[in-house]
Image 1 (cartoon, rainbow, N blue to C red):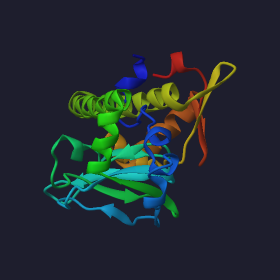
Image 2: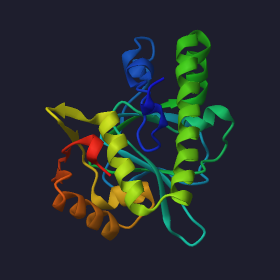
Image 3: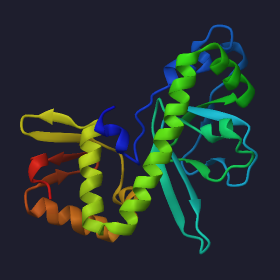
Image 4: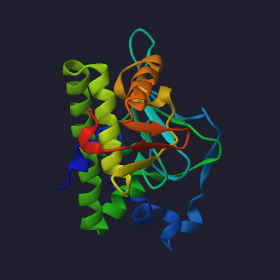
Length: 226
């Protein structure tokens, strides 16, 4: 298993093409995509867990609110990824919320009974589902460790390196990361503030270690990014 499986803010199990009922002849007529606008909730904390969801288009934020009302972001998921899978492990009510981050976010819901039926008929699918659940648990454990033992600069730099390993494209000695994440998104994922992220990214840019705009982050040399 590659180092990518250690990431806690990206998912590396793409099951949409395997699971989506629209790609299964005997199920596609019973399912419709549900479209959400930006900031619209797909489900809320404590809502009954009845479905697993697959993202066909757009992005979805998974998180919860702390006791003092602060939003805690666990993951930002994109097209091809699934969420709500803990319902398969016995979760009766949602521990988190799911919220669309883009307009026209298209999501395909599959009931728990249907998913269990698919898994019963397909051992490989069952393995991938449980791999996904285990992967997300490990990512959460790593996130807790990072928040407790590492400073903000280290967390942001590790975020950039992990993003490069997962979605980066080599351009000579440089690595280009296509991303729609804002500084606020990165702050939420790394347990820092938007201002802190902006300061750190600008310092790295001034040191000619990275460059960035609204669509991409360019890392000059991964080995020198410290």
